[in-house]
Image 1 (tube, rainbow, N blue to C red):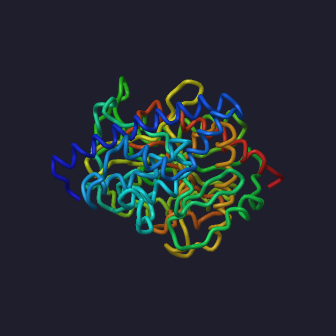
Image 2 (cartoon, rainbow, N blue to C red; image 1 turned 90 degrees about the vertical axis):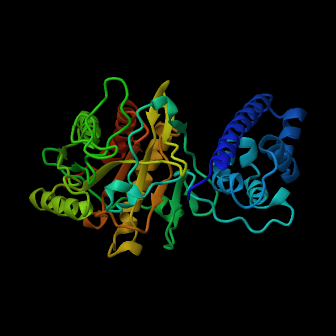
Length: 407
């Protein structure tokens, strides 16, 4: 949807004031939480559970929201993301959502189901739209990209078990508790034979050029330079897995070049060929990067900090039987849950919620150990993505080592 310049200015103002509100409330919460169970801290926590107080704070910081268009429309989509960054506001998320959906929360209609806060305004790239012209262009000024540590939500579509969040965009029911307690039905054989296949349906996906990490584009945010695209990310993962004693094959085929259309069909044929040649392969990782861009053209990147270093967040994307024949999809999802749990334990905030989509099975029907791994987004730098990829491999490797047996 196109917006006029006036609305764009108001939207920018809303974002700035929202950020200020988040920072202030988070700081106050941390300060009072440190005071223990004192009367002041308890009083503040009580206020955080008071819908009227929270709404008043939002009105004071964001101003009155006018009408059903312009900043209201933008704020409605971003409301839960803003709330999710603040412990105080998150404690009364439902009341805040109601206020955002109607004037002062009085007589507000049931709020519309929020967009996935883990994808602020997703491009269709991850859905393989077969249209490279629709993909976002490289942003050459990293300082202009907005970082977001994308966190789970208790909103519509989310389920949680054993500390792991799943964002289910489909109509298929998912029992997260059963998945969390289930065993992975995979046994990795002798590492003298290949155990893991790393491949890339969209190998040419690339990141924002930064420093010496520059490249010649083959299309928007894409390159055939394997030191800069997803092949580099796969190599970093392979190195970590092999350091841990796992055996890895890396398919560097650019299934999305020279033709983007039909990339998943071609990569599926490639995976089947590998599985036929190497029956020992039990794990298939299709490694991508995401693309996060707002309707106004603003580029976002999922970013966290690990050991003081900026690190791209990682998201596991799972297909579902809504998109086709996929009888063992719950087994793949069980593996995803175990790896997500490992990431959350070792590197809190590294992982975005597992996302289940109904648009494709992503070739995951070919094995019960197939995952689509999105490392950062096109707004991240290559170095941020490398750090995220290596930490993911370390966390996943711990899970996979437990699956080794006699074959």
